Amino acid sequence: MAMGKKKRKRQQSMWVLTSELPTSPAHPFYARLNAILEEARFDEFVEGRCRRFYSEIGRPGLAPGRYFRLLLLGYFEGLDSERGIAWRVADSLGVRSFLGLELNEQGPDHSTISRTRRLIDVDTHREVFTWALARLAESDLLSGKTLAVDGTTLEANAAMRSIVRRDSGQSYPDYLADLARASGVKTPSRAALARLDRRRKKKGSNDEWTSPADPDAKITKMKDGRTHLAHKAEHAVDLETGAVVAVTIQDADAGDTSTLKKTLAEAESRLDQLMRRPEFFDTIAGIQEAVLDRGFHSKGVLLELEEAGIRSYVSEPDRGRRRWRDDFDAQLATYANRRRIRGARSKRLHRRRAELAERSFAHAYETGGMRRTHLRGHSNILKRLLIHLGAFNLGLLMRSLFRSGTPRGFQGRPGRLVAMLLRLYRAWRPTLVAHTRSLRASTPSRRNPHLTSSGARVNPSTTGC
View 1 (cartoon, rainbow, N blue to C red):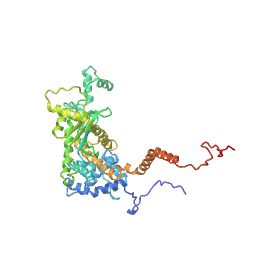
View 2 (view 1 turned 30 degrees about the vertical axis):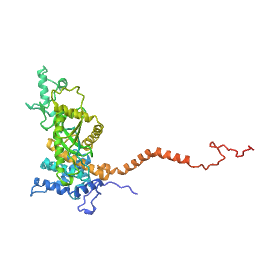
View 3 (view 1 turned 30 degrees about the horizontal axis):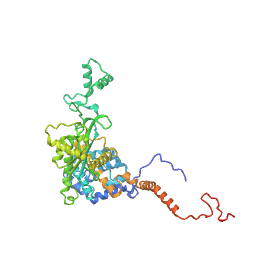
View 4 (view 1 turned 45 degrees about the vertical axis):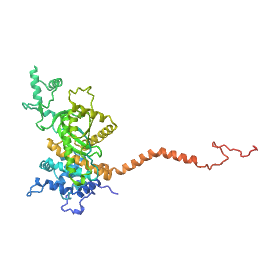
């Protein structure tokens, strides 16, 4: 076989037959996901909800069904930015098949995705999220009876060095330089400013500083200990199935006790919207139990849950002996919660909360690529998160139907089958060996009866001759 050589100069063909264009079979995961979307008439649903945002005249924009598929793609491929989504579409023929792009049709630009996101409001994105919940309810993967609420921080698309004072608009380096001059340093260097900044206490107050790039971002300490501008995402997770019932974006410096009410109200609104439909009236229950960690524990939270008819399972921190001062209702609510969390059911629920709530964070923000946001403003981030978590719920549906909730997991199914068979063999090998030995022991030996177990010959004569 002769060695082929790469042509240094290549003349482009003037005419190319469409039958000769490179093609690729659709990704099996996206093909099955598309079948689910088409069976539920996803495109007709989103086109009806988004019709008011489009004009009857002018150049056709990005179709709503294609726009929401692009955001679903961001979750399944772990793409954090709209620019990365556009690059992925231009690079993969399988993804183009999922979006319904023809061979001669150009993929959407990142600016087109961004403009379409700004065009469609938050309520429409919530309706698409509720549509994904309805698909789970049709497959009996949504209950809503027992919810766990937990939150995490998302790194904002803004730098700490760009913060300014709220009262004067002065930047942080200029403010440090003024402090150094007031302390007697005429020409402070950067090293001197850094030493001065390290000695200062309580220097990152959100009441004094803000980010001009993203006013919704707040100064907070991240999970890894770094101080950064961030947002807070809070999930309400169904503990029976692992589905995310609601997601909210709130200030990163807000405490858990102050953000819980909004998240539970959002979850109740999503469940009520589904319960109004006659096909889900018997399958979906209202919120009856709330499982929370100790960051949510306060007498105000316990009273609100008690008044709403929700049984609380809130872990109680060690605060010492309480003095109620005639606060009888809060005392009863606290003692009732304390009695419940000491039971075996509470321990099971908290184990489920630690598993399922953290799993939703890991899938959405670690492998899903949204730990650092590339958008600014709570409304823009919430639009992306609603479809991101809607894709997470669709992944649960795909896992229940095809045993794989992600494209990468779907590709690794043969390998997982072999690994499962190996694990079964290793688990059952001692039992099989013991069973084989018992069969050998119970089976009569066919060896020479004149030989002992050691192989020595025995004289069969009784006289010894």
